[in-house]
Image 1 (cartoon, helix red, strand yellow):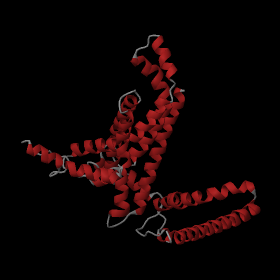
Image 2 (cartoon, rainbow, N blue to C red):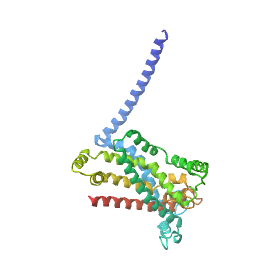
Image 3 (tube, rainbow, N blue to C red):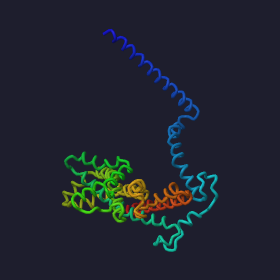
Image 4 (cartoon, rainbow, N blue to C red):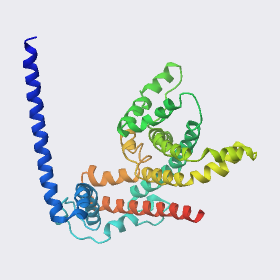
Length: 337
């Protein structure tokens, strides 16, 4: 009982210290922002609060983009842009030099074109499968099923995992002495060369990336489905519409703006695929899963003779292709409307 007054005094002292620090911080902030407001006026204050984000964007996004342009039109192996000689379009000429664009072996930079064709194949199948499965999953999760909240969280959970972690887990499962082959041999079957067979490697990269990212697009489509008024389905049922007619005449037309967003986002992510493939197959076997971003990484950072100019030129070509594909989708959507 005698110690309680001492404890109370200590608590009051600590509380007083924190109060003093709080008051000091508030006073400093009031001095800084009050002085700033008097100098630039009330209308200029929004720019003050936006400035930190603009600085971060400029330093980590805009400046590297501008530096990338410099590298693309210069040569040499120096990392400093001031020590790189002007090369004009030499890097682009090297990438685009081909006798037959359908045959990578006839190209001066055959690895680049192998990466291009691998990326095209990956994008076509991965985006189609991603959108289809995301739509089916969203339609199911939008129904009044038991444990709907649980299943929604289950499908979204892989999105929370690091792509590198996802790739390493699946590599542990699918490698020659991995979990799946261990089960197969235990059952008396032969091992399947998942990671040393080109066809298996391409297929598995697509399936794993779909598994890892599908929850994100499912969530977007689910939000789009929930924004469709239920009265429309009730009116259609009264008019005698069957489920397919309701889906084709109500759901899909009203869901198309959301579908365009999903298509654009999934297309951009698919073209930029790198982390999962890098950790899962490393671009192999051979060049079976070599994609554009890994080609850029290899020439810019991992090769002994670093060719920053060639890597930068390849990244600009990829960026141009992304812009064109996105514009085509948006224009096609606008014409439909």
